[in-house]
Length: 102
Image (cartoon, rainbow, N blue to C red; front, side):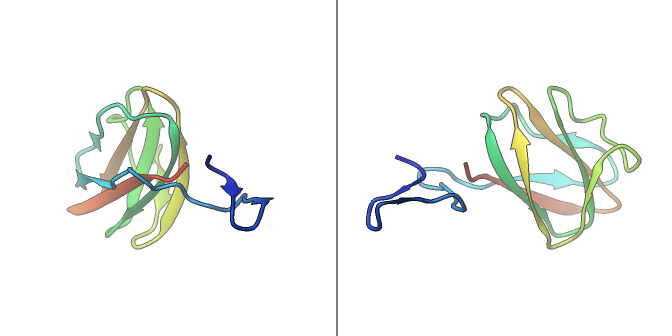
């Protein structure tokens, strides 16, 4: 069961649960892009360039004015609700990576 440390018999609150879950990527550029619909969960998101992100049922309408800025080589945990997508736009070409962790 997630959240239980059976070796020490205590609740663990600052963990990631990546067993059986693979990271995925999204090519980003000056044109907005979005993932396919995602399962609900907390996702770590990082990118090799500065990127603006949005989470929603439709996320490819993100702009540099409306998106949340994630600086290059930084990781941010984001809640994605069932059926939502991650949208992203950047000033140049890059790769956004995302991995469900809870």
